Each structure stands twice: as structure tokens, then as C-alpha cells.
Image (cartoon, rainbow, N blue to C red):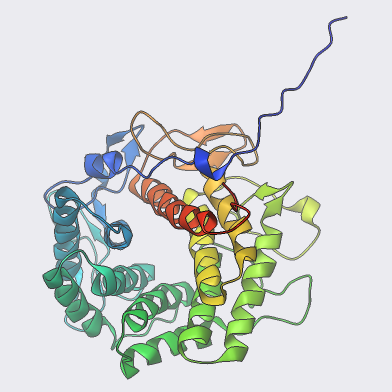
Length: 362
């Protein structure tokens, strides 16, 4: 009988991580905004646009340290879309059809929070002075709103954190950040379920991240410790056999780990984990956070529950989800921006690792 050997691939090194590419973001963009869905890599115009994804697009471009002229023009387009979506009271519409008709009225769902996050990031780090000024004007209009949804508040709070980091200190912006942390609540005392909610659903790392940011920027040491505790517990929950296994679409509830389903996992969850760990590393200076950050990066490169590379090297797009049978091959805006955002963190991690005597993760 022939001997069967299972080949184990070598571990992924930081030097193996590709540079972020914007090809597919441009493919999904037009003179109006960013088309939400794709079939494979082809934009599905019939599904139109949403503020959620345009906000993500503006945010990720603002994080790019050296954007080219084409990216700057894209940021201008996304910003115009968001200001058009905003109501007089600071809330936002979310959905626009391909023929440029709004399909809803301004309200305060997750899209309001994501718009505030994108606007706050553009106000702090936008690629031109006028973009920063216009984004700040729209952000200030949205400051008068508060959502009843914790995740909407978390996203908005992260936008407030961006504005506060850029300075000078602004009391209304600090108030929004504090309100976001209050809505999320405090971690519990049960070590088996630290999370302040009865279940883990979506965008969980953003909740921990905004509590960390609030503790840091508002000078509340107890809040900072709470946020770090939440994130540390969540990273432990999402680690499986040494790699990231994100909370899937169906969520997780308290109970035995063996009973938790693992699919479908979304790229946006890996990106949110990378964001939160990068913030924790920046705030604390503790290189302990580099390990879960690197796990979030390598999730896209195949270090995940099925060993599947989650992006298309030909198009630069990211697959929409990880199923038990491999990837959903559609390459939508949310997933592709999640990939680009996470690979931008890899640049920072590489710079930080290069300054360490040990060479870090490289």
C-alpha cells in the first residue's frame, strides 16, 4: 500500500503579505459612487449603491498615506455621495438605485454610524485640505444625532476618535465618543462570557475598539482596561488551532465551543479584528497585539478554517465569504475594502517589526 503524506504548508511570514491593490475598487466605482455587489468580479448595477460601502471606501482611502491622483478623485466622489445622502438633521439615507433615486429616508441605522466613521476619518486624515474641511462640516452636522443601535454608535464613536486624535480637543466630539462607550456597556465578570451582550453577532471587534479609544482619549483608565479585556477575550474566542476563525453570520452564544458553527465567515469581520488590534497596539505600545493582528491579515492569505486564499490575485478583489466548501467567489465592495484595509495594517506592522531587534514577524 502506498504511503500517503499530508503536506503542511510553511507558515506565512510578514514578507509574504502582498501590497494592497485598488484595482477592483476602481472596477466597482463610477461617477456616482461605489456599486455594492458583484457577480464574480463584474459589478451588478441592478443592486445600486449604499452609504455603508461608500463610507467604507472613503475611510480606507483616507488611511492610505500616499494616495495617487485617481484615489483622491475617488475620495471626492465618495464624499459628494455621502453629503448628498445626509438629511438636514444629520441622519443619512442608505440605498440609492443605479438610476440615482434614493430608496429610503434619512435615519440612524448602521449606515449613519459608518458615514460618521468615514467622515471623521476623512476629516482627520483626508488627502486634501478641502476634503478634510467638507468632511468635518458633514461630521459636525451628524454630531447632533444619537442612534439606539450599539453598533451604529460604535461606528460613529470610531469616527469621533479619529477627529479627537487629530486635535484639538472638541467637547461635542468627545461627548459622542463617551456616549458610544456607554451604550456598549461594561464587560461581565464571568470569565467564560466577558462580552457585554448575550451573544456575539457582527462587527464585534468594533465595540471593543471604541471602548479602548474612549478610555484612551477621554483619560478613563478603567474604561481602557475594560476595552482591552473585551478585545483580549474576543481574540481568544476567535482563535482556533492557531489561526483566526471569525464569528460567522449566525453568531455565537454562551455554551460549549464544540457546538459553535464556523461558517459563513465574512471578510469584514477579519478586517474589524485587524482594526481593533491595531488600535490596541497603538494605544498600549504592547507588541502582544501584533499576533492577533497578523492572524487577521493571514486569514485572507489562506490561514483560515478551510485553508482557502480569500482574494483573487488577477482582479485584486476579495471573495464575499468563507463557507465550509470554500469561498463565495463573488467580489463585492464590502469584502474588497476589507481586504485593502487589512493589508494597509500589514504595512504598519512591517514598519514596526523592522525596528525590533528580533525582526518581529518578518
